[in-house]
Image (cartoon, rainbow, N blue to C red; front, side):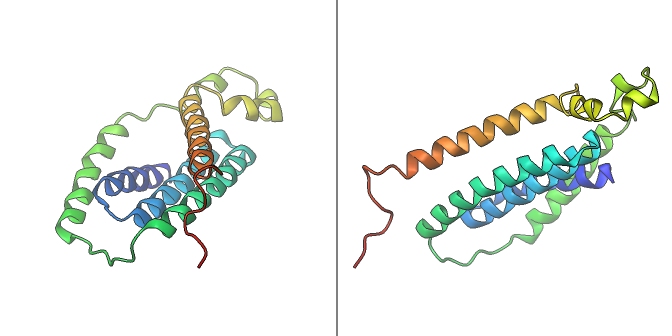
Amino acid sequence: MTFLLSYLSIFSSLMFMSMKSPLLLSITIILQTILISIIMTTFALSSWFSFMLLMVYLTGMMVIFIYVSSLASNDLFTMNKSQFIVLLILTTPVLLVMFKSSLPFLTTTNSMPMDYVSSSAMKTIKMYSKPLYLMTVFLIIYILLAMIMVVKNTSFSSGPLRSKK
């Protein structure tokens, strides 16, 4: 399951670089957010943090999505099938290298008794453990920057996006 989620995450990241339409870019970011939330849920064994992070992030993305869709043109997009196949082929070796060694993800809990591991405090600690703290910090910074961009774009001094007729 983790292998498939990682594969989809890397594949959507590579597809993100080849897209030109702002609406497709937004949809790809939303897909990537959902995948990261699912990966965080499987690693942390607690779904509340990833669910709350997903909800906050998606609400910010909806505001940005509406802003971009009001400014973007209604052009049709075409998919380059050869580029899609090349990206699909290139992501497979990357994942094989990533998962060549099967290291346990939760190394801090191996030496602890099982009753302590199952407590709710340990579940909260796991989301800030070594495999997840970088992703958590990255998502927090990204959400902060998205909120700053939304506030900057919707300042009252510049007026609305479209004027009333």
